[in-house]
Length: 178
Image 1 (tube, rainbow, N blue to C red):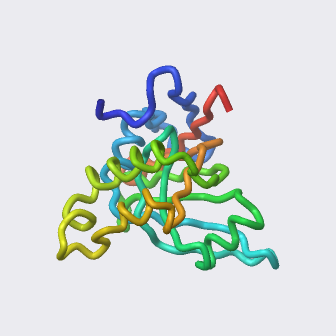
Image 2 (cartoon, rainbow, N blue to C red):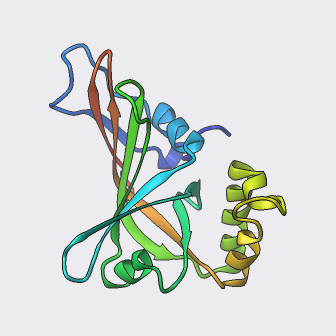
């Protein structure tokens, strides 16, 4: 299935007030395609003293949310221990296309079977980067499954798709079951 959410978990979509008069709400299928194709995401967390922290990382839609990995002593992990609210952003570095933002709560994935599923989804998406001995993140999957690297899942609370030129539009997604 190319869509990232099951039909019963599909969010409601509403066109935002800062949209062009000709804009239409971006369907979730289009936003989820952006999430599925994006290679780099930006994770925004809050430091214990309230200052923001943003870092690029790999992410994949799995287990009903966006999943990413990190070491336990990295700044993002320490921030999430203090405050699990976060934002993942991806899109284009251009004035055209669509940017997607997912806000939610990050939680550690503890179940081995869920870690295995997420690793399979990461490997399907990022391929040789994770599976080839020459890959930048070779053996990351093994470390995630073993629990040596933290795996987080961000349960989406609200999302946004920002359509850019030629017809700018802001779509807000809300998940009815959340």
